[in-house]
Amino acid sequence: DAGITQSPRHKVTETGTPVTLRCHQTENHRYMYWYRQDPGHGLRLIHYSYGVKDTDKGEVSDGYSVSRSKTEDFLLTLESATSSQTSVYFCAISAGGRKNGELFFGEGSRLTVL
Amino acid sequence: QQQVKQSPQSLIVQKGGIPIINCAYENTAFDYFPWYQQFPGKGPALLIAIRPDVSEKKEGRFTISFNKSAKQFSLHIMDSQPGDSATYFCAARPSGAGSYQLTFGKGTKLSVIP
Image 1 (tube, one colour):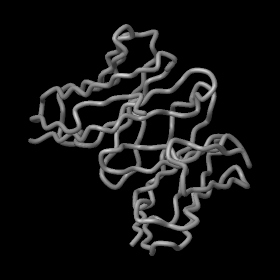
Image 2 (image 1 turned 120 degrees about the vertical axis):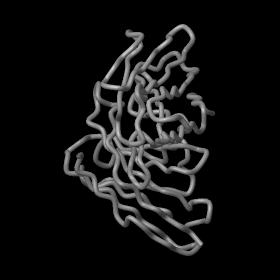
Image 3 (image 1 turned 135 degrees about the vertical axis):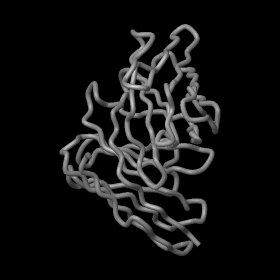
């Protein structure tokens, strides 16, 4: 299994509070991604990173920010959580090049915003 | 906008049956089509993938059929087993710039009953 660790795995928070989810990899892969998974919507890309300090927006980036100060860590921050951000969040990594479609996913972080 | 349309949303088959999951895409610049399998409580995992220069790819009991002219591809599971019960996602990767962003279908929940 790819070395990907997400933390926390479960979190309950209140509307308006900041939340940070962490993704840590031990594979030294260049690309890292944050997806959210919701019933009826499948997997939707929030943000991705193609290198240290190089990030870009995905399909559903509003209300989220990311940072990548080291190859192995990719942080997802909800500055002020809303109930619509209740979801399961998955981090994924990819080696890039011809393997760009080969994503390795973490176990997920279930976030509930009350 | 949804660029990869997946059907059906859910599927129930008897053990030994051959479930078929279909996906259709709109962007002709896609060059890699992976399928991911997700068990409850786990992250998705790459199952099998195909490139548009071939019409079929088999790996064990899993087969992808690809119809480039119709812009459709499908997953067949031969001799399905209860252990195949999972959610399956098709995806597509654009060629060239943006090739690090996969577009996922909304998923198909497969139940294989004994």
